[in-house]
Image: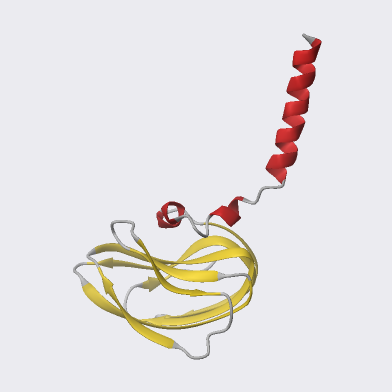
Length: 156
């Protein structure tokens, strides 16, 4: 009986130590199922951002995880123009589009500075569409994008 209690106590301590060292944000970056969820989960520090009309700019000192920054409930299939520029100082980040069927498409993925802005057209499907910023471990970045339809949401 004493051995069983001792084993239980040791197991509890080990679980606490291991659990405290695991950062759940780090497993999100490559997990499309979690990215496609309607939930946002992130650690973020020192985020300065500006939104006006359909223009979004943010400078983030540190982020891990994901957050929704754009939503569009399209009444029909439509083309949406997006122009973006990303500068990643450390870590890695990506802009992803989640369509109404929860399919995740990468708009841009970056671990350095982009030389020039990129303009592309997204062929949005009827229904709820979202764009999320997804950041890996200790990611510092600046992002600037303009989009032709939908609504912007605050990062963080």
